[in-house]
Length: 409
Ligand SMILES: NC(=O)c1ccc[n+]([C@@H]2O[C@H](COP(=O)([O-])OP(=O)(O)OC[C@H]3O[C@@H](n4cnc5c(N)ncnc54)[C@H](O)[C@@H]3O)[C@@H](O)[C@H]2O)c1
Ligand SMILES: O=C(O)CC[C@@H](O)C(=O)O
Image 1 (cartoon, rainbow, N blue to C red):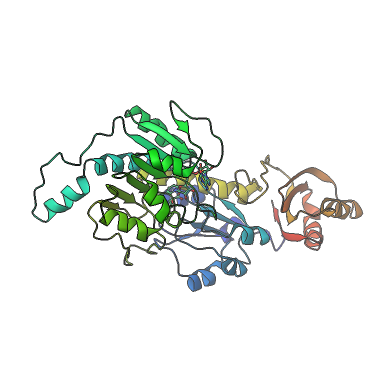
Image 2: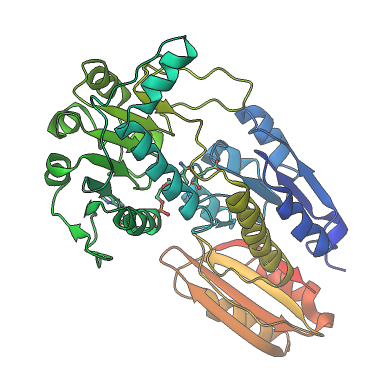
């Protein structure tokens, strides 16, 4: 048996951050037994020590997979992000190591959209302040500053999976929906696209952010943007903590320039439920603060567990990389009776011919072959007879540009 093909009982999975048990169930029913789980993210040094011995890693948003961490990951085959965002992973470093990264792009969109709408209603009614006061023995029975959601304008920044779900639900409640997106999008229902962020801010009663964390979205809402919002408007951020500058927001809330805010994500978030949450927004009664739970419902987490674990199993069992966020996507049939060689390489001219020269020079018959590339890497899968796989694998590893090769049988 080849040294680089492990039997399933030796393949190690590490699932961090309280990933739903549905993931472990999928892995166990696929025959994997070495599954270690932890309720929290690991600090960098601990993560580096652990990752050295792991073949598959599951994380959510709190684990930081930097280039340094990937340096230690000599056995790592794939990472599963059991969430939508993949900004916590250095995708280039993963690609350089030949590590495929998967996520769950849709399983929690509904949960986020529902939370945002609920928060919008509560903020428009001043419930956070009235609730806080009642807990302190106060009684604020008043309609002043309380409004229905019907007829209000919702401004959505980022009209993707979550933004569009929210748009549909908001219209069902009688809201007007406007959105800003860098891409021209087909508006759903009666929603309309506006051409600049400031145009959106100037006309929205509620602004809700649904962009990914990128260089362009970093601090996209700062002092100037808060100033551009309508007096008495509401800001909701359930996207990423780096999208909003907290200090100018806190100031606008203290000055009552804004009616309220609901913030689910923060520039710095505690690594576990035992660490202290620190923020200038603490103590402001017109702000709903939630601990990054936009996607945290039992339904969403169970679905994410299934979805991502199934992707890891398919990649481990037969090399299928469909819906990977950093890898060429290949959907592969089963390969009964054959050994399957997986070769991941830099996408430079000549690699495929070098690979096929190995097969022809060594009289190895190819039963089937698949190639897919993206701008950076190529992924070649070749099914051959079992007898030749050790020799072929040894030679494939020597091809110039090789990032990783392994065999499945
Ligand atoms: N709080 C939570 O628990 C939670 C849960 C799920 C997702 N999220 C976050 O929400 C983000 C959005 O999720 P999604 O599934 O809707 O993503 P998506 O990729 O489907 O949509 C993002 C949209 O933002 C647009 N966009 C990108 N850059 C932009 C910019 N600079 N200005 C304006 N628009 C821009 C894109 O064109 C796209 O339409 C995720 O990336 C994730 O970070 C948070
Ligand atoms: O569950 C998480 O930690 C992240 C949730 C959310 O931000 C996502 O990107 O899906």
